[in-house]
Image 1 (cartoon, rainbow, N blue to C red):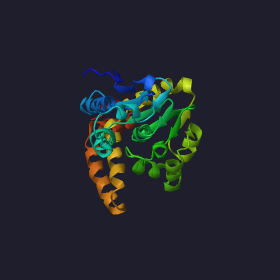
Image 2 (cartoon, rainbow, N blue to C red):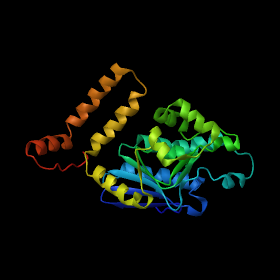
Image 3 (cartoon, one colour):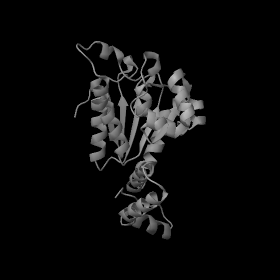
Image 4 (tube, helix red, strand yellow):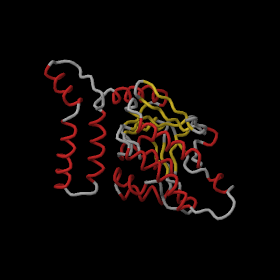
Length: 261
């Protein structure tokens, strides 16, 4: 599939999706939402892809919704339907993808761009990156999964503060709050992300995916339910090639050759 608003590059088991509307600070229009969703769907179906990187081209990760695109529409516009048929599909596709997603946050992430960034599994932020919930500046509430994802990462008090003040949170504060995993020099972001992605793609990606499934399910159940679900998933992992290879490699004192199956 040919894309116009994103770039998709697949090498050595890693799919890199680059939001590519740099003149608009990678603001999302309908086409970019749909193409990003399609790229994640393609990654989920391609067994050769074992890790996904999501980043932006230029100065921004994503400045959120392209408001000029919305204002240019004729007739009545339903924000609710726009979310249901656009961002919601994208966030679901990302959260359900049982392969690691690295968010390489190369610059400003604002509005819906924050929600998309938070839907990645590991977030590596450039030291000049920042996060801002800009919704209140236009009289809206946070969306794109932010109300669910952000309080679970940084606590409700800080998340609510971000929502009502629309303050820009620099990368180092985002790290201190638990919003990102690492802050790295901007000029090294690509190199460091590639190292992370290569390592994850070579790992037991079936187990990585099952772990993601277990942690997502844990939010919906109690401890005893989580224990039972862990046992169910561990049964699947224990029957995999990667488990057998990992144990054999450990006993033979060599590096394991995982296949993600």
